[in-house]
Amino acid sequence: MSPTPTNRPAYIAADGALLDVAETIAADWAALGVGGAFLARNIDTTEQLGFDVDDAVPLASVVKVPLALVALDRIANGALDAARPVTLDPAASSVGPTGLAAFRHPATVAVGDLIYLMLSVSDNASGDALFGLVPVKEVDARLHAWGCTGIRVRHKLDHMYRCAAGAAGNDFFLAQELAIRDDDTGRHTIETLDPAHANTGTAIALVDLLQRVWRDNIAHPAATAELRRLMGLQVFTHRLAGELRADTLRVSGKTGTFLHLRHEIGVVEAESGDRVAIAALTRSDRRANLAPDIDLAIGTAARHAFEALRQ
Image (cartoon, rainbow, N blue to C red; front, side):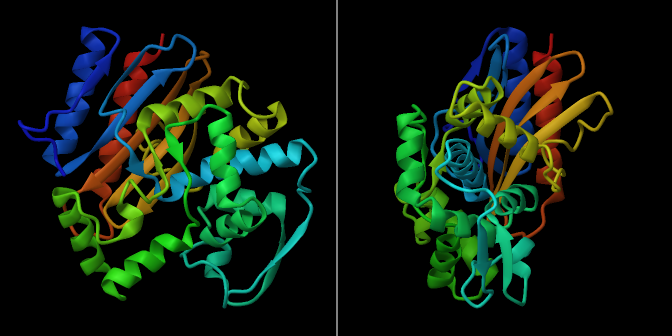
């Protein structure tokens, strides 16, 4: 649902110049028929800019970041072996276009490599295999114990697709139409798009999480270090890093895509020492599998925010 005069975004900004940037980003998104939430924060100065940062949004594959952190924390504390082999059978695995989810034959992979595949190519089968070792309720409870109350983990990844299929069968465009319609009505036909039942997070909670990971003040330091490394290996860099490609910059991120949702969270680091955490959570009002203009708008927002917040 796009921002309108009766649904004006709630902005936050440290000063007038940063407010101008936030308003420009929201206006650019609205012009494309995109609503959502955005927050960028300098990790070290804590200056920030954004809008609608407290709105709970279904996370899609962004949920793989907190799942990875909990799994890596278990590994760092000796409760889970990163070398433990796990065998996945495509007949029983989660669906998806990448990684083990796209395999046609059984494969055995170590736990540590499941985490790599889940983050680098957003492999749903690897993610749900990890949920088999670190249950949904444990991930949610651990986040709560760490003070991450704005993030909720309620279901496995495959549940998203089962709920969509239950509502629309194999008709992808019908599922998108239902998702867009239900954003307007607030009554969700697809359960995993309902903030009361979905894996959800707010932009501010996700940026808080990234800030704590980059500052090593959540979980075991070995876990946060490995999460930073793995997020830096993400293959899909067409959103957050779209306009931040330079030898002097490093972008570590994780995308999330489901029906009309296109998200990314991540951290932009410069050789100068600037570090900016960003959460861009979008929903569109169109039925489209591919939306490169929305991906570009996320990248443009990230560039404007990074340039405004760097010292």
